[in-house]
Amino acid sequence: MKNLVEKNKITIFDSTLRDGAQAEGISFTVEDKIKIATALDDLGVDYIEAGNPGSNPKDLAFFEHFAAAAEPLKNAKLIAFGSTRRKGISAAEDDNIKALLQAQTAAVCIFGKTWDFHVTEILRATLDENLEMIADTIRFFKQADKEVIFDAEHFFDGCKSNEKYAMLVLETAKNAGADAIVLCDTNGGCFPNEIFEMTKKAVELVENLEKSQNTGKSQVDEKSQVVEKGEKIVPIGIHTHNDCEMAVANSIMAVQAGATHVQGTFTGFGERCGNANLSAIIPNLQLKLGFVCVGNLAKLTQTARYISEVANIPHNRRAAYTGKSAFAHKGGMHIDAVEKASSSFEHINPELVGNERKYLMSEVAGRSMLIGKIQQISPELTKESPQTIEIIGKLKELEQQGYQFEGAESSFGLYIRKLLGKYKPLFELVHFKTIGEQPQAEESAENSASAIIKITVNDQTEITAAEGSGPVNALDKALRKALEKFYPELANVHLTDYKVRVLDSTNATASKVRVLIESTDGTSNWTTVGVSADIIEASWLALVDSIEYKLIKEIEEKFKAFI
Image (cartoon, rainbow, N blue to C red; front, side):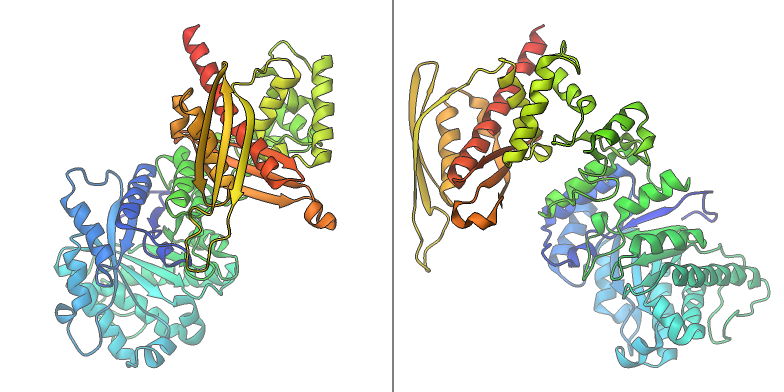
């Protein structure tokens, strides 16, 4: 760490692999953690806290992988995380401390108690014992030539309980040689004004400690140990939790109070209500306040969505900056204004964070937006063309029937082709039949249904059967299996999401349902829709659209390459 923090540089410390892994429903494999670490490194974060090697063999295996890697990370430093030594023994005797050394990282993050209540009631130690545990642990790692980041656990609650002692903990860590001191709102219960005021006091404390080094006098208590004169000013960091939905705001306020190191997780993963969301904090600091956080901000959206995918957690559509809806416009007047001047309804250019503007297909969309989609298929059409007016009218009719094209633009594109006479079926259904069975309690539902399908392609007939988890899954497998003989490119296509919405519950089992299917070929994703009073038929309509959309895009790409 440099003696002087670069002007406007905010150090980004990611804890997705450690703090984020404590979230309910998340369990990273070693391979998952390697993938995420690589993505974070490409984005340009400064530190990646990857786990506690003393707590489980999986984290140790992760560190061993990178210790032996031929190509280490390019931008980030890996961090091994652990607590201060236990009371009554030296740091050199503590097994968890030894495990941190075994991780072979250049830097470690050590957390220690700052709240006097935790010291006496949780650790069952005296206040002086806690200070010595902190100092001894930090000195041990500094003697081992490690960069040490000290997390002051429960700092803000500690300040409310006993501010003098909480500040004494910071002084002890600074004087023991900590390279950065991070203030933690561990319970996530503080308000932004509290974070600002106490962070400012901590920043002033460290600055005054630096000034006092020439005299050797403590700013808080004579018991804290002062190291050699002329040491660098230690950066103050912030680590917040989201229990009051204020973690992002609290992190920003800490930076405005003088913190230059920010900890958090991507998409806000974390225990209880989560941690501070770095995918919102980073662009807020870099684009709004002029700080430098990461070198590849245009990869922000890609990174956030990729981490959600690896974690097997759906990415929040409405997430600031990185969500699919972050720059989505639906109302006709809004769309018209954005077309004229994007800043009229967008606070930043979405490309800055790797996202994209999206105009939603709906009954409230105006011609200005729809014409762009129509012209992708028929460039000669204008807003006043009879075909355009007809398409808009049909769109409104279909949405009245229950279709929702804002989440299924692929189906909308196919529908435009049909209305314009530019659609030719790539296969024809002769018939299909699904058979569902209720598995016994002791049986697996993995193959609880089967489907038989007969199709024709260019006068050739194919009959195929398949089993699946339910009739829709069986039908999907049977359809793609039958078509792969004619269209081998479908081998890479599979469903990633399947949603059913009852449109009119007052009709009970006779209600219409809307089925949304999201598909992928490993490179791109697309969503299609089907509506019917029969859930199998609605699913079939969405499935057919999904397959045909993929095949039509393949044909169009080949045609472009040819011309």
